Length: 233
Image (cartoon, rainbow, N blue to C red; front, side, top):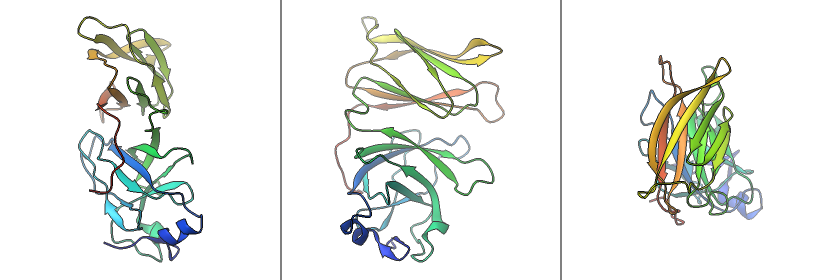
């Protein structure tokens, strides 16, 4: 392990000087149809680069990290050069000051980009993402939409869309959930399913293109309970 020091100044020292925020809890999802897993690292509260506990098609376990100037840094190695830390930078995530728990959706950057991944923020706090609600992120370049029970929401590319708790359910708590994309001015369904909605469960729907495929696909992340603060283990 190597202690990450931005421009030669330790993260903890900068925290004491007010340059970095207190530790926040981070979880992450890797959405890469060509690579199921990659190795990424984040600075822990001491400034040491530790491995991000990514899990295939699921949320990683909670870890603590310290944002630098309001930004969480993701590295592609734990052997970060203290004099040139930006050379190991894989992604960045801007986190608002009031968000102390965050979910990072990590997506491969287009060819030729400076960083290997871009990260999209989902507020992971109880107020920002209440139990029973859903979030939708579309990575396809066309407009998409979701109909979950009684709720209909249009989804803009690259934006996180909130879906309230579904109350229009059958006796098994199941509700019809359909996804559409817009083609020639018409909404075309590409995924239709029955999904169980209960108050304690949060869901994240990730809409992504299929390499070489005609239709998008939906990855569903299920979060049964709000995470409790945790360390890096």
